Image (cartoon, rainbow, N blue to C red; front, side, top):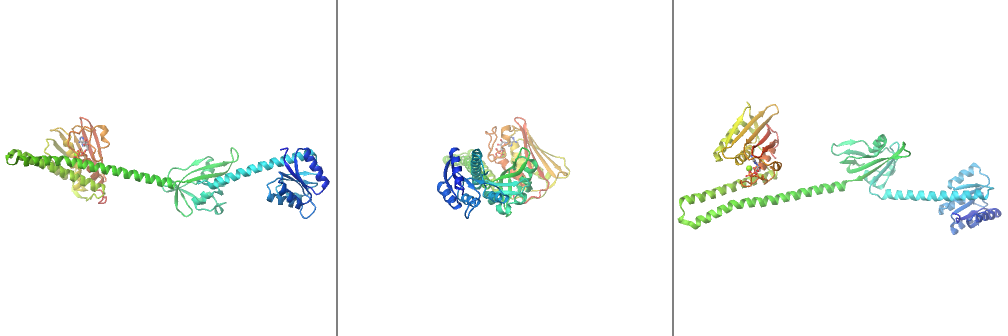
Length: 503
Ligand code: ATP
Ligand code: MG
């Protein structure tokens, strides 16, 4: 610092020379001396000193204080006043120019050096402080996160432009207002207003973060999904003198998430559609091949065909047509359900009656040797349900029980009506092959078939239909099964579901 360049402003020429010589002795460079305010300003601009020693009392229009303030307006240079006496009024005026020190005349070389060094250091520190502050201000003004600061009473002391945009408040309107009046935060899941983070930090004296799915209510009432943190501004270890809240707008991220989810769903739907189409066409190919082969054989053999053979071929054709019809019906049913076009027509019916008729029809149609045993110990079995859908539901469950049981197997079909819970509980229990545990969770997916049934005919749509029918009744279905022991499907349906006609 010994090389600092100094301008001396002193109207007593002899004193000015003496000071200049003292400065040279101390190793400073004197950029010039001036004896009036006007000359001082000109020399300051011309020689760009690093410090000005300014006599307060100057002859001419401008005294030292006025001159210093002119210089400080144009140059960032520290001024140290030289004064023989300091009346209060003068010192007060001098303060306005933010002096970097005073030296009272007469002074020693040592006094001069100390005053200059302290003035230079103070000026350097002030410049660094200003630079830091400017950098911080630029940072806060340019970052996209919203920053709001408050004092220890929770009153707003600062808002950056991002905070103005996010909250809809201008800093000038918000300053001095309680933070709790500037922004509200709401929990999107429960739709309740949450405690203002500023209030929370002032109470808990520590950093707080927002829960997920939180929105800020803007000044215009609109909601913006946000993330945020709020931290105490600490003066000492135990003293909080404010809070700083940082918000970030999550709208875009939330929007992206929603789009990603929609896209995933769309892709999954497309995948399922393709699988559906390829499986369905594959399933149709089998019976078509059977029909084609049988027709070719009949054509080829023509008149040479015995009645017995003809009967066998025609039966094959009939069987193939029936399985195509069944498949067609299943596909149409699932398609209707997928398109939410499943018609639900509840009407009064007696469940016990319904079950008995169903198993009667069943034993005629299903030419299996399984025995279906129906039991019902409830007195009242009246209900309001969709009989058509019940037919699909229990038709499929019973036909599975029979299909996956050995010949001669026994199938229990139980009905319990619980008037207190207002539900009907159905059990369809077989002693068949059972379902591997690994398959049980996926049984209600389209075309899903157990790993142990590959040699048995089936499409894997029956339980999908069952589930749709149960859903239409707002009921529940569950399964318990053990390999080699048997399977029980339990269906619980409200005795009178008031649901609408669409499922
Ligand atoms: P379909 O569409 O002709 O009914 P499927 O019977 O294979 O074909 P689902 O009724 O949907 O299809 O049944 C899906 C799978 O669940 C079956 O393939 C079988 O693995 C298993 N499953 C269903 N019911 C039983 C049962 N009672 N015992 C053993 N496995 C069963
Ligand atoms: Mg089935």
